Image (cartoon, rainbow, N blue to C red; front, side, top):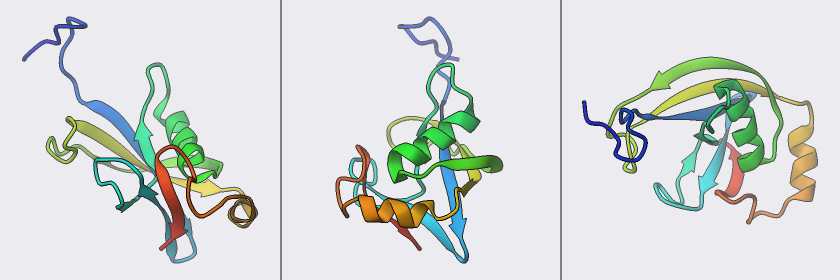
Length: 126
């Protein structure tokens, strides 16, 4: 197996998390600002930071990308197709979360339609 010149360790996949938040028959999606998949509607998510638990990372990413506070994270599935992400091999943990009651409605009164976060243009239920 090849080794990383920088860290002298193995070239392991990166770990990412995706937040699955449902409201009735709809699911929360964010529109990506940047590649890969700029403009696409995706689950809010991102990479797990060094020293961070995946359960904490998915709550953080949901807040960063959609402005919502999630709770009760539960693993739904793991995806790890090596060529799924064009940047590198990424293993993604899809996690179901619940949101605080009425938080979405309160947030929509405060936030404009664009410029929602550093990585998301818009947020919506689909």
